[in-house]
Amino acid sequence: RRRVQRAGLSYVVETSNNLTQWDNAGASVQEISSTPTGDGVTETVTVRVTPAMNASNAKVFIRLLITTD
Image 1 (cartoon, rainbow, N blue to C red):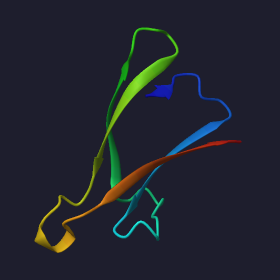
Image 2 (image 1 turned 30 degrees about the vertical axis):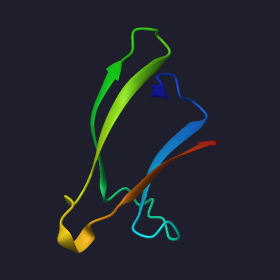
Image 3 (image 1 turned 180 degrees about the vertical axis):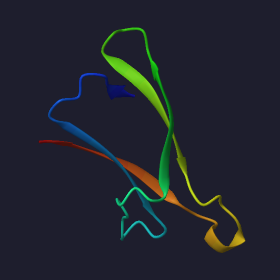
Image 4 (image 1 turned 135 degrees about the vertical axis):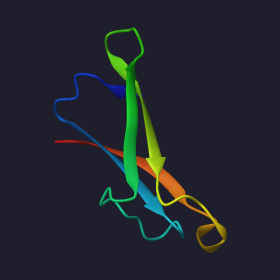
C-alpha cells in the first residue's frame, strides 16, 4: 500500500540476489497496477520483478525503501 497524496515521500522497490548489494535502478521492477483501497488515503500497488525466475536466478530478494524528501 502507498499513500495517494505522497508529496514529500519517495517509494523505491529494490532487488538483490545476495541481500548485500541492492539495485534500485528500477530496470527490474515494473508497476503493473494501482487500485484505490476506498479510504481516500491509500492505494494497493502491484509490481512485477523481471526477468522471471528460473534455474540461473533462483532467488531474488525484494525490499521497499520509503524516504522523505
